[in-house]
Image 1 (spheres, helix red, strand yellow):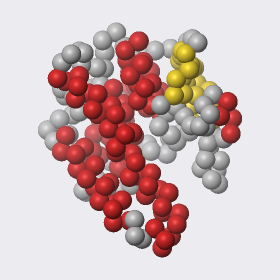
Image 2 (cartoon, helix red, strand yellow):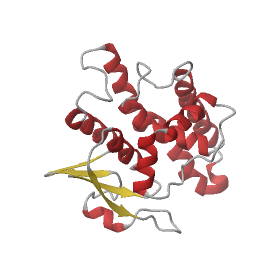
Image 3 (spheres, rainbow, N blue to C red):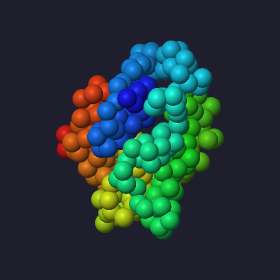
Image 4 (cartoon, rainbow, N blue to C red):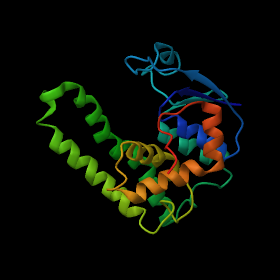
Length: 211
């Protein structure tokens, strides 16, 4: 049985969703953010020295990092689902998106979050951070033009990884600038497997309000 170490209102939500899409049996070990600091509890460090979620256990294997977890679960338990065939051009594009989510797109959002606590001291960095958010989201927005999903127009692990970026964008009220991304986030959250993951995982701050 797969165990998911799940922090509320975090990127581990997409691992719950992935397990539901693959119809995998899993248990959840819940961790709650501090209501004041919004930081993860120190108990997470018992499974991940960085104190971050998601982490999964699958037998003797303990694995962190969202991209690695998505890749592992699909390769090991997916039975050919949610990834293009290895050796194809689509698979290479799939790998790009799998890594783009955390390797590129999330960084400027995190910089905005952290520097936002500095007040006026962050002013010199703000234009560059805003430009980086806009440029990354434009790549994402353009990739969704005329497409429901990112790779071969079929749901894949790339969409699992990019779901948090889409939800984060939508919840910040950027729909006018990035309508394709917001529509994509709504398609994701309308899926029965996503809804099942929400029921298992509990309240999620990035659930979109009804249109």
